[in-house]
Amino acid sequence: MAGTLAFWLLFLTFVGAFAAQVARRIRIIAAAPGGFPLDNLPFRINRFLVDVVLQRRTIRERPAAGLMHAFVFWGFVAFGGYTSVEMLYGLGIADLTRTGWFEAYRALLVPFATAVLVGIVYLLIRRAFVRPVALGAKVSVESIVIALFITTLMVTFLLTFRFEEATAAARVNWWAHMLVILAFMALIPASKHFHLVVSPLTVFLKSPELGNLPNLDFEKEQVGLETVKDLGRKMALDAFTCVECGRCQVNCPAWGAGKALNPKTIILQTQGALLAGEREKKLGAIYSEEVLWQCTTCGACENQCPVGIEHLPIVIGSRRGLVSNGEAPDYLGAMYNHLERRSNIWGLGYDQRTKFVQSAGLETFDPAKHDVLVWLGCAGSFDADFQKSLRSLFEILRARSVKFGVLAKEKCNGDPAKRTGNEYMFQELANANIEDLKAAAPKKILTSCPHCVKTIGNDYRKFGYEVEIFHSSVYVEELTRNADDRSAKASAEREAVTFHDPCYLGRYAGKVDEPRALLTRFGADIKEPERNRDNPYCCGAGGGLLFADKEEEPGSRISDVRFKQLQATGANTVVTACPFCSIMLKGAQASAQADTQFVDLMTYVNGKLTKASTTPTSQGG
Ligand code: SF4
Ligand code: SF4
Picture 1: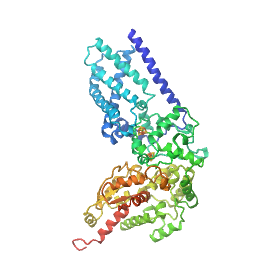
Picture 2: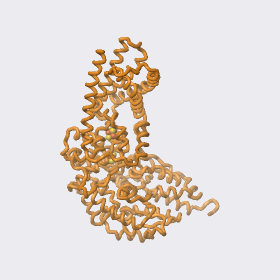
Picture 3: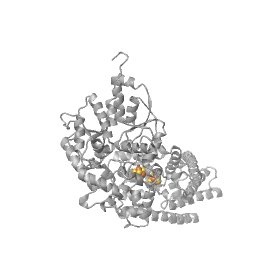
Picture 4: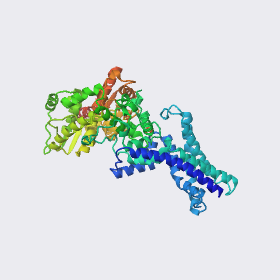
C-alpha cells in the first residue's frame, strides 16, 4: 500500500514535469502561423513506413551508427506495452503481470533488450570517445545520462529473469527500472531526446517535395519571414525535433568549405529563439544575414536529415523577408536589375538568342508538327559554351528523327529570383512564361538545365501549370537505348571519366542512373568521386551564388573543394550535365591551372555517336 502511494507521488511528479514541458512546446507550435499541409497522403504514409518504421534514412548514410540507433528505436517501440503494464501495476490500477500473454511478450522482448544494449553501448562509446565532428566539440552530459538510463533499463529488465518473484532483490530491481523510466520521461522534453516523441510526426508532415517553397500571396500582404513570430508551424515543430546528429552540417557544402553557415545551427537557433519567446526579433539577427546568403540551396541538409526537418523554407523564407526590406547583397541587386530589364540573368539582348536559334536551324514550336519543345534557358540562350552542348543535343534528336521546336521568346524561368527570395520577380517571370507555354501547348518539354526542370516542373505546378519535363540525360538515355552496333563497337574502347551529379538533377530530381547509363553505353569507365549520385557535393552556383564575388568569398570556394574531389578520382575527363556546374567547375579548374577536360554530357554522347557513324566497320560499311 505504502509502495503504491510512493509510486503515485513519484509518477505525478515526473509525469507532471513531462506534461508541463510538452505543453509549453505545444503552445509555442500552436501559436505559430499556418497549418500542417497533408497533401499526397500515399507518399507520406510510404515515407513514414520506410523512414520511421524501417529507419532507412537513419541507416543509409551511417550504416553502423544508424543500425545501432535503429536497434534502440525498435526496442523503444517494442517495450511500449511492457512499460504500460508495469506502470498500471505500480499504480495499483491493474495487475496484468501474471497473465500468460504477458509472460510470452516478456520472453519476446529478450532479443530486443539485447539489441538495444549492443546499440546503446556502441553509441555511448562513439559519443564519449570517438566523438565524430558532426556531434559537436563538447561531449553532451545529457546524452551520456540518457545512454546510462537506457542501459539500466535493459539490464534491469533482463535481471527480472534471474530474480525470484517477491524477493528483496526483485523489488529493488523493479524500483530501479521504474524510477529510471520516470526520470527518463521528465528529461525527454527539455532535451534533444524529445525527437523520440515528435519525430514520427515531423517525418510524416515533411513536404513530399525537397526544397518546397509555397508561393507568397501578395494580395494577403505576405512578404516572407522577417521576425521569429513569422516562422510557420512546421518550422516550429522542426526546431523541437532536431536530434543534433549533425548530418545536415557535414553534408553542407558551405560548411564543408569553411563558411559560417551550418544548417544544424540554424535549427538550434530557431529552437532557442522560440523558447526564449523572442517573437519580435529579426531573423537576420538570429541567424546572421551573412549566413543566410551563403546557402546554395543544394538541398543536402534537408535530404539527409533523418527526422524530417526542412531547412530551406527557413533559409529562403528569411531571404524573402530581407529582399522585401531591400536588404539583398549588391551582387543580387545587379542580377535582379538584369532580370527586370532584360528578363535574363546576364542582362543580355534577346537578339543573341535569336541569332543562336537561326544558326542552329530551330523552328518555332508547333504542337501539330513537333514532338517536344526544347527549353533553352538563360544559358542556352546566351552562353556560347553551353550552346555547343545544345547543338550536340539537336544533332542527337535529328539523327533519331525527333521533331522539336523552341518558343519564339523565353524569359528566365525565375529560379535565381525564387531561390534568393525575390518572390515578386519570380512570380512575374513564371506567369509570363506560363502564358507563353500555355499558348504553345507542348505535351513534353526537354531541357539541358536541371534548374529549369525543377522550376518549370515543380514551381510552375503551384500556379496550376502541369507539363511533362525531361532533362536531356533522361530523354536521350531512352532515345539511344537501341543505338546500333556501330555505336557499341565504337564504345568498346573504355576511357576513364568522372561524372559530377548536379544537385538539381541527382538530389532534387533523383536522376542518377540515366546519365551513368548513357556514359557507360558510350564508352566511359566511370570513376565515382566522393559525394555522388543523390548526395553530390554542390558546385557552388545555386541560390544566386553564381553571381557572388568569388574573391570576397569567406573560407574556401565551394567550386574549388568540389573540383579537388573530382580531380582525386584520377580521371582526366569530367562530364557535367548542368550549365552552371560547368561554369563554376571550369572556373575552379582555371584557378588550379589543371589540365582536366570538362565535357557536357550531350557533347560526350554526340561525339561518340558521330565517331561511330564515321568509323568504317569490318565489313567496310
Ligand atoms: S541547402 Fe545546401 S548549402 Fe544550403 S544549408 Fe542546406 S546543405 Fe547547406
Ligand atoms: S537538423 Fe536534422 S540532420 Fe541536422 S542535426 Fe538536426 S536532426 Fe540532424
